[in-house]
Length: 166
Length: 166
Image 1 (cartoon, rainbow over the protein chains, first blue to last red):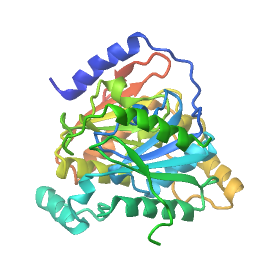
Image 2: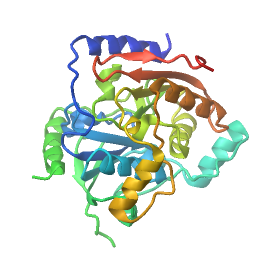
Image 3: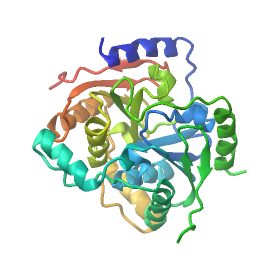
Image 4: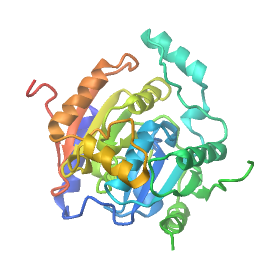
């Protein structure tokens, strides 16, 4: 059975006792930006209820043009005011580098990506880089940012000092 | 209290009974691409356990260069082979259009975004557009894609026929 069929069957269970009626704007006015890593179920991990916060995720939880697009919509159209970043230990992007990644893709597909993978070595420093990029953006109305790193072995978040090591 | 402090306190609870030891590669070899909407807790909604699937989310759940970057890493570095798309009813991106959004941001910040918001009108058609963009990408090794729309009032997903209306 393809995985999507298992997911559609599981969704039947989810829908059985479902309560709708929530508004589109997040109740707690927060947008979370996190890595796509499979070990981070963000709702229970952060104590979020359905309807509480936007959740933006990509490889690394990095700040790209698409992250800025999503946050700009989140703030201007849907009223969020805080941003919480969640990077994590043991990330796939720490296991390669941009050139090796481009080689790997080119060898498998014949096409070399023109965009960088956005690999990194130090998770805390990568969070600080994200905070710097958000602070530089001219499109956001609120720059109230908390950067964190999640430890996949302990389940614990630690907050990153945005100005450490600067 | 800022929302991030509530989240860090909730995370203490999450970490209390935590079991680590999961590998970085997703167990079910799936990457989910979904909208950032606050009403979609994807793990329970799709029956996912911790460690099962990558979760990529942005405004609309649309396919951008960053979505392709994340999926290319997911497939080439971390071995996923299926892609599940989750768009939804009552999306914030159905409540504006690209020009009005750019006006709104410019009026509030003085800066006009050079990138489109990626607004849409029909959720099923937007899923089909995402499938088309994924099929066109030269960087992915697997194009095994299931597109769905989530109904925020019933909690139910329906599968989108990728070739309907073509």
